[in-house]
Image: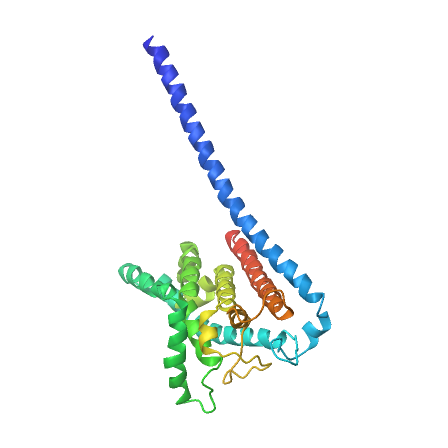
Amino acid sequence: MTRNAQRIGGAAGRSSRSALERLIEMFLVACGLLSVLTTAGVIFVLGEETVAFFSEVSFSQFFFDTQWTPLFTQKHFGIWPLVCGTVLTSLVAMVVAVPLGLLAAIYLSEFAPKNVRNGLKPALEVLAGIPTIVYGYFALVFVTPALQKVIPGLAGFNALGPGIVMGIMIIPLISSLSEDALYAVPQVLREAAWGLGARRVTTVFKVVLPAAASGIGAALILALSRAIGETMIVAIAAGQQPRLTFDPRVSVETMTAYIVQVSMGDTPADTLEYKTLFVVGASLFVMAFAANLVSHRLKKRFAAGG
């Protein structure tokens, strides 16, 4: 009787654990489906409104016009001034963030003592937790006035100031992901280089960095997509004047800043002007998706050891 009771109790326990595991599995599947359905919903809404926009505006007006004035009496729907402003501020951000982020990653991975690394890395990542609206006002009231003292002709709203601050913001993203990629390089490669007489700095730049190139490339592209999608910094400090220019001293308008402008509530719903909100959002989605797709391919290559 005792053995039978033990067997029955063991079977009941296994059945209970199996039911719990199935419940957990169903919950995880539901979470995955929720993210997929959310993405599909976003694509559906953007696609539906974008089709409605292009039923009133031709592709030639959208892709070949060089002015963007959908809220003016004389309307133009050329997307390139917004794309130019977005690319310009993102490039300034990358010029600032790439060298600083990579050098920080190299130091943390290859030169910093363990206790220093454990202290510096969390301190560096604190930058990622600062609200972007704080960065925006920092760019407007501190960085831009400081730059105006040394750069003649710099406007109060410009692409340079917010671009620099965006670069500071994405430094933790580049440094953290690049440091992980460098740290994952097998130690045997370093030892082989040392055995051939290479110095430590030579080993880092000739052996370790090329071995981690795929992971570093993925980190840079993720940082670029983060800069492209940044909203509050450029909405506060870059201005609202769409220009087809690559002069960082003048006021520009990015795609995200325009979305904020239209979303303020002054534009009536279901109008052509309101539909530009979705076509700009769809364009921004395509740009960010392309960057993330390239990053994903690089990460797969890095994971495969390529």
